[in-house]
Every structure is written in structure tokens, then in C-alpha cells.
Image (cartoon, rainbow, N blue to C red; front, side, top):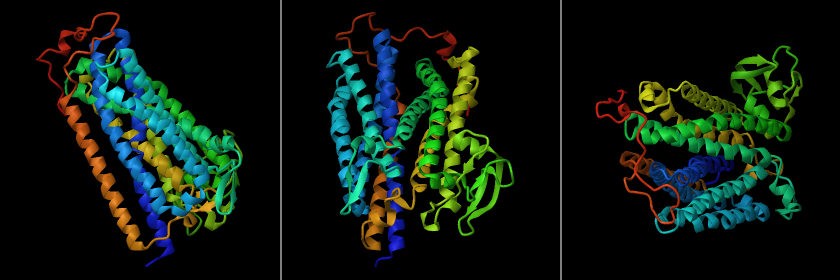
Length: 482
């Protein structure tokens, strides 16, 4: 039983589920690894045992997330060959090599140091351990580099030519540093830092809110939110650059993201709006309704008050991407990004006014609850950003060179469904297990043991410094109720 359209749709749905679940873990791995390096560096510089305990605590969360990322990553690489065999074969000369580089230069590199980072406490010197932590962070970034090279090349395939059904590489530099990669990789890298920092902030806010070692976790709450004052607006700026790159190299994708059907000159005349809300109607080639703002689309696309804005009417119907998903997922991503920025800005105001102590924050439970919730928002932003990126590229698997229908494996519908059920259950079990162990680690809290003393120059290791005030640790201090 074979229905070509249904076969393509099932393959896309299956791979969409796999990538949606997998992309939860690598960005957090990168963000947490970078945070662990700076937390451990803080411990070495101050010899304050509190930073040692915080580093060990968040390292346990890192290990759980890292394992989930490896498991779902293996599943995704399997899915390339199972669901998209013709694509894997045709793009192998470039795509396969890039994934091979990722394995050799990043994954194996990371494997060489992650054991030292996890099990090396007290067995190797603190400086060597810091070096191992740095290399885990660096190798995780290097892994993201190669993965984004491969995916960005599918968006803007440069440096290759098609010969006998294979995409042969003419210029490796042009293929690797393709136009989409130059902004997409920084965008994903900063998103990873944002996820890691908000994850740390959310866990820390929970501990402060529950009055569980509040003075200790105030350190990571403060450090992460103050770093986000820089990271969050930086992400917005890089996202703007990525949007302009999409407008230059894939105007059909940009038109789908904006629900923009008709080419016009953005001069303020009727129907020259950026659509805040709309309901696209692909059958009619227009929006059933829309609420827009004049000139904003031109300003967003090329930072000019008036310009020619290509619409979907410039492309043949069979070359137009779906509109509803990119339109709304793009807006959710942008709204989430600005919300995260304003949360960081609120924290900065509280810090500037001297209201960022445990006692003061517990008198503002809504702020703490908001920060706890914010730990989930970056994942929503990454999800919706990835959906925008991948769906807006359709109907192309390799933009302009290979359609999705040409790259799908030929298998029966029952086989497609069976693979979908298998992948669905596996990724769901990994996700549930990840959150179960996250909760277990957070409930347990940091370990009470002392930091290792070998090769530890500087001030002696001791207990936590005295809290800012007795009120913060007094047994009579009552946590605010939910």
C-alpha cells in the first residue's frame, strides 16, 4: 500500500517529531557547559566552597541532559537513512562528511574530557579539572557548529554541483560558510546560552522561593539574570540579522513567515502592512483576515521606510511553502524572545534598587514565579524557531535543488506508521525520564561534602560565607505561600 503524498507527509511528521524532541537537549548542553565552566572558575578564583557545591549540583543536571541528547541524537541520525534514504545518498558527499567531521572533531573530543569532568573531582588537580570542563563546553559548541553547517547548507546550498545524482563539492569553504550559516549559527549559539542561563535562573529561583539554601542559590540566580541582560537583547539583534538574510536568499520563506501574499511597494498605501495577526488562506492566495501596521514589513526586511517587498504571488503555487505554521511559530518565537528580555530587565531594575536579596525576593513571589516559568520559555522559542526554519523551506529538502518528495524513502504506509510509533515512544520515554531525574536532583539539592583540597593554592577551603543577614537563614523566616 503506497500513497506518495501520504508517504511524504508521514515521513515529514515523523522527522518533525524526532527533531522537535532532540532539539530540547543540545542547546541546554551547550548553555549548561558554558555556565559550569564559569561557575568552576569562580570557585577556583575565590576558594568559596559555595561555588563548588553549586557547580557539582548543576553538573548533575548537565549529565542527565547530556545523556538524553546523545540518545535522541542517535535516533535522529538513524532517521536520516530510514526516512530520507535518497536524500542521504545524494547529499552524502557533503552532508555525510559534515556529520563525520562532527563525530570526529566534536563528539569524540567531548568524550575524551567529559569523563574527567564528571569523575575527576578529587582525582585530578582543580586546574586540570577546569581545563576538562572548558573542553566539554568548547566541544559542545563545535558540535553545534557542524550541525548548523549541515542544516544551513540545506537552506542555502552553495559550493556544490549535481552530477549523476550526487551533490559533489566544488568549494568546501563556500559550502561550509554558506550565507545562511553566517547568521544562523550565532543565532543558535546565543539561543543555547539563553536556554542555559534561564534554566539555571529558573532552578535557582525555585530554591529561593522554597527557602531551600536561598543564600547559596541567590548567587546563581543573580549571575544568570545579570548575564541575560546582555544575552537576551543580543539574541534579538542576531535574530533580526537572520531574518534579513532569509529575505535575501529565500524570499518565499520570508513571505510565508509574514503571511505576505502580494508584492507591493511599502509606501503606506492600502494593504502595505506588517501583519500582527492574520489567518492565511492558501486556497484563495490571501489572508482571510489580518491586522497590520503600515511600513513595518519594509523596516523589518531591509531597514528602509519604503522598499519592494516580494510576496508569495511571485512564486509558482507548487514552490510556495506552507504559511500557517511559519506565520504563527515565527510570532511566538519573537514574542517569547522579547518576554525573556523584559524579565532580565526587571531583574536588573531590582538589582539596581538593592532589592535582590533572599528576603527581598521572597517578598516578591510573583517575580520568582515568573523566573521559574521563564526556564521553559526558551525551549518554546527554540521549538517555534526551528519549526519556522524547517517548514518555511518546504517544498524543498535542499533549497532549489531537491524537493522533499524526491528525498523520501520508498516504503509502505504501514512501515512508515510503525517507524513513527517506535520513534514517538522512544523519544517520549527519554523526555519523561529526563524530567523525572531533573526533579529528583532538584529535590535532593546540593551535596554537603567539602571541595577537594589537592593542588588548591590560595585561601583555604571552608564553609559558606556568612549570609547577608541573620533574617535570611533564621528558622522563623517563613516562605511565601503559592
